[in-house]
Each structure stands twice: as C-alpha cells, then as structure tokens.
Amino acid sequence: MVLWAKQGSRNLGQEKAQLMTLLDHIVSRLFRDEEYGRVVVFPGDSRGRGYVVKSVAEESRIRSFMKMFYFAHISIIVLGNFLAMEWSTGINHELGRPTLHIYRAMAIAAGIYFAVTGIPYWLLWRSYKKAFTSFTVGQDAVVVSGMAPGQKAWTYIAVALIAALVLLAVGLFLVVGAK
Image (tube, helix red, strand yellow):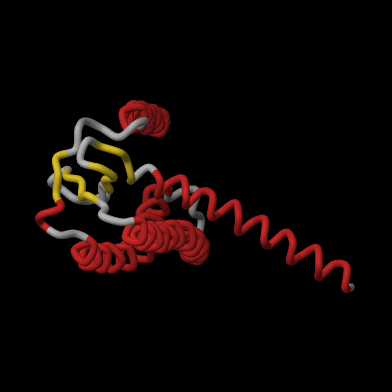
C-alpha cells in the first residue's frame, strides 16, 4: 500500500508537469522580441497592440497571470462540456425517445452547454479584461509587426476546420431531409 501511494504521487507530479508544459507553451506564444524590446501581446486586445515588458519580474508576473487565466479557461470549457453532456443526456432520456427528436436533443444540449459554460466564461472574461489593465500602461503600447509566429498557420487550420464542419452539417441535413 505504501508503494502504491508513492507511485501515485509520482504520476501526479508528471501529470502536473505535462499540464504546466502545455500552459507554458500557450503563454510563451504571447511574448516576442521586437525592435522595442521584449513585447507581450494580450489576446482579446482589439487594437492589436503589444506592450513593452520592462523587467524580468514583470514578465514573470504576466506569465503567471496568463497561466491562471488559461487554466481557468480550459477548466470551464472541459468541465462545462462534461456537465452539459450529462445533464442533456438525462433530460433527453426523461423526455423519451431522443433518437426520434434529434433537433430537440441538439437544442437542449446546446442550450445547457451555453448556460453551463457561457456564464462562467463571460465572468472570467470580464475579470480578465479588468486585470489586463493592471499590467499595461498607455505609454508602453507599441505597434506589433505582423502576426505572431505560427498564427497564420492556425488561421488556415481554423478556416479548414470551419469549412469541414459546414460541409458535414450540410451533408447531415441532406441525409436527414431525404428520409
């Protein structure tokens, strides 16, 4: 039993390290070197500006804040997805024969998902926008040259994914409508 406890804590440490590696990767894409110096570009800043980071301590503070934000972001989406899936499945089965009422089942699932994830995410986004201003000063704003490395590739991937989903939806609509 002692052996199992030691191994469990070791695996927990490895899982935590992997999660932190993912968060470190996501957050590191926000920072880049420009002619002005080290610059951070906050997601959601509609002006597309960067802000000069004046010290290593300030960069560390911004990094830890962004890790907390992304951890909360991922948690809301993943946990909200599981919760919405379970609740909508239960409701659909209580209403009876969910396979015959596919549109009703999809509407219930979407409504619950948006309620369960939308409200907490909206609150998270509001607090992020308020905290965002504590890290920035108007004098530190600089124009960022072009897209971040790899951002163009993600744009192409997103467009391809959206196109595939639209084609899938049209195909599903045609198949269901033909019956």
